[in-house]
Image (cartoon, rainbow, N blue to C red; front, side):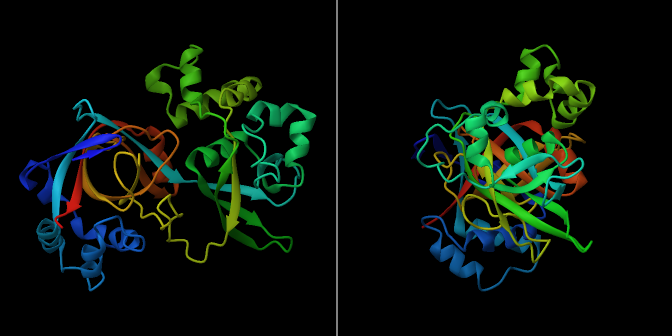
Length: 332
């Protein structure tokens, strides 16, 4: 079977490494989320899934095997090895107004965003009066650290810890609302090219450590990535529900991933064979393809959603592992 960006090769269930060891029942919430907007061919499977989950991991595996067929995902030239990275939902302290240390703005989409393509670059928005005028009054919130703004833009969403005028704390979500139509460039790659970091040091913790040691060069580093993401604010009634991915459904920590939709359709189930970044132990599990990202291109390319909190940040910031992946397709 061929997709625009990949080919799928049918295999046996026994070809999936670690298939019998996954806590497969944990997939069910992500599966039901995906069934809110089912992929082509998934209607019958989703209808059965809504009737209730099987009792345990083994029962869920049996249920999946009866309804799905596994295919190995390869590039169009037959390469089955790829790359998995990780992402998370940051929690960042913010202010509604510029005050004290809070001087870095997050913007909602400018009024003329659709009429000027490409839009102003990051450097132009920081330095040119005409560019600055285009986003004046579009400030959603103010942050203390430009790297916090960058990580929100890279991750595509996040949570803001705000203090209301009466002193009451609150948390809101900011979600992706557009970008400036400029190319995404990795600041980690820039630091490597500049000879500032080795490739094994260019993780998010390594980038933050470099910035602390080189505060005067932080703008230069940030300007190396011309892309700017704009946000919209969303309420956060349930802190245990993840942000919405590109499929339009909330993401589930550890069971939702971002993919290249030319290789795998949104709403597909996938089997991953990779390792955890901190322990290097096997990470083999069934997940749902529910998001994408500008850097997620290629057949065997996945971005793994770790969730939120400090552990998720540590895992996501260091994840850059070899990957093999299988897509699980309804038999009908």
